Image (cartoon, rainbow, N blue to C red; front, side, top):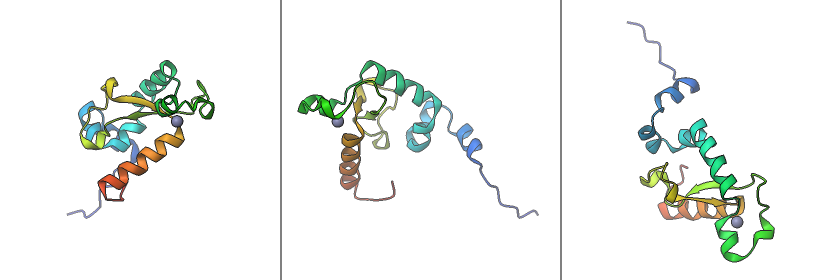
Length: 113
Ligand SMILES: [Zn+2]
């Protein structure tokens, strides 16, 4: 019996996670997918401003249309949200995205992400 360990290479993993439902449990590969990148870029073209900067009237801090922002899920997909539900999307600049991630991580009380 061959005791060779099966190594899953990155390109094989991508194949495994294909299909929208698989992305929900593997949000890391979801964010790396071409489908998400394309959709996210399109969304940021349509919504160039960080919603938090808009709220705080701080638009000088995030330059519109430079691709500096990120498309964020208001309800994180790691909490079971549908990653493709655009009503759950918002554009954040890196500063606001980082502080949201930080808060989410604190809320979840585990640091493996
Ligand atoms: Zn912002």
